[in-house]
Length: 95
Length: 477
Image (cartoon, rainbow over all chains, first blue to last red):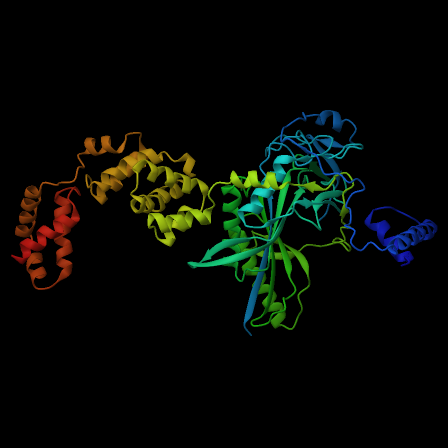
């Protein structure tokens, strides 16, 4: 399977990454190389092998339901570009 | 053409945990903005999520309550989209393998029972809140809600009317509160429903194109939004148009649904397993311990009320609408040591009515189950008449005196002395010769008027059945 330039642009848009035409061309060839590697792996017979959802063969550790975090919003907001009334302000979102 | 409505419901129930699903920040509603959003919730670089055991336990409890399959191993996935109230740029959810699969919920519509199938229920995190008003050219972001545990519960498209959809939403609402996994507060957004609505020509198997309706924060709005949407879709189709699959918002002020402008690719969420979270495993032993701690479920209780207590299906259904009501009733009949039907008729009748009028919840009732038991004992042993019981009940509601004290203070003890009743009946017949004559002539209405006179003279303290017997005997003589 080979990607097209449109696929690259679409994925870039979905990820909100701005790329120009030259970059898109370069990324296309890089991604197609990645897909070649995927194709080689696809060729391996994996019948009877359960897919792993994680690289580590371990299970999720769970924490107890307890409040361990204190209010640090002043500290967090000291690096925010724009804050008012304890709210983070972002450019108006239009629905 | 006759059309059939098809509805499926997606519900987001906030799980009532103390801390968030992947962080140790607090969850209570209504805190000052951003005071309950920690480094994990606001997605500072380098933080890692760690799943909350209680959120998982509550999801399992729900699965057990609806007879679903609990997946021993489930997977957290990233659902990718950009919105300012989602700081990570993805929501941690479950996609291919949810924790709960299948199950059914029983609903009642017009006295008929119906089993609604559930597709799945999965764990995910809530997003923050965007405040669009009050800032010129800006949107305010409060991330307190970000990371609050949600159970997204998806039904099959099994509902066929707005009434069925509401019955399902209510049954689900009652269930999550019954098993204590969600506080069910719809105003605060703890329990949110989206409806997938489509129509198709009656008799056709193939589903029509559906629209998803959002912003339904009450059962009434759910019902009205679906009714509007069904009318709209039928109109479009009958005019030869086609339905576009889209998300629509319900506007309660205008009582209509309208299309949300959706951006291209908005639904390409590019799910993939979250590398920050290992597979979630729940052991058989853990599931068993959650199962054994589960209290009697509404359906089992309802069946027991009918079978063991001899209650009507209706009374049993009303009593098991909420856990609070069922517990109140259980305490009441426990104190009374029986009197199941009498207790049921008072709890579903007078008691519920007065609570509704006052807009109170059961736990706020000034009449406890013990106090009500005090009154019902006197009804059961015929100390007071049904009419006086209502008066005592009102006095109990408005004051702190117990039933016996009120009965004594107001002299409401039923006249059991038949001699006295005989004298009153004689007097009533003597002074109402016309009605007595009418009754003898076969006019039944006249009899009721005579009974009424006796009740009036005895200030309601006579037993109407006894009065009736005495009057009949005397008038026959």
